[in-house]
Length: 293
Image (cartoon, rainbow, N blue to C red; front, side):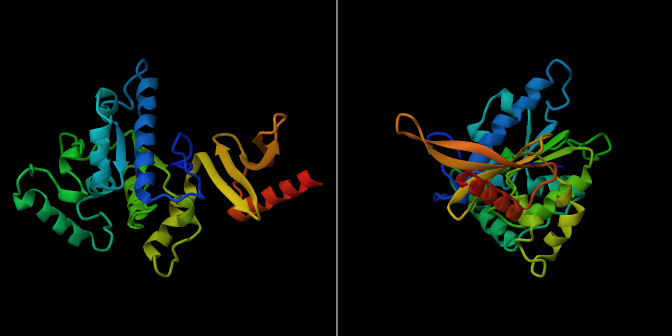
């Protein structure tokens, strides 16, 4: 399994850093839009050599039904519809069996209220498949089966922001999806897997999540990783692009010849092994100290 991790709101005319105020909806929308633009890169690269990723063989797995619906509405056209649109819940149930989805607390209540507000109410303007405020089930693609009714897994599963800002059960279900289709490549986009690996959620309160760390989340390969680090007024990044080594990058504000300030990036540490957050901080501070000397 692979992970891509970067600040989703960094860049553009509405850029936000880790020091700015933002909400989970903004992060979800940004990660959704980034993945929608990322997925077609696989379609284009295989046009001449086959259709390994097209014809629905790339699954876009959203954290919830509403994000799936929004993606369908906002990203139309054959270029994007070459993918399969689904959710963590739908894919877990499809691949691992009915009833296998690990639902967050209160999900059944929310679903019941949601169905009343949707098509089940028979209200004006409601259509079949309309699931109320939580999304439209018509936005889900049909997941394929063979002649005997067995699921046909994807070539590529792109899982968009599971767990981070949402229920921790998303991370548990990602493991189920992977185990049910181990030959599919799983890429988790901005899933904040460090929270899982570093036991941000105490094992005593989240035993099922804690059990996934060693057997699953410790095995992820970081294909792109960019995380801001800061301490004592010193700022930088922990950075990696596969297959290059890990780098700690120190950012220093410099004054240019015309008096305008600019940011200078300096690689102060390189390692084939991923450094811990505290080790990265230590290396960054040491690099800053050496610059002053």
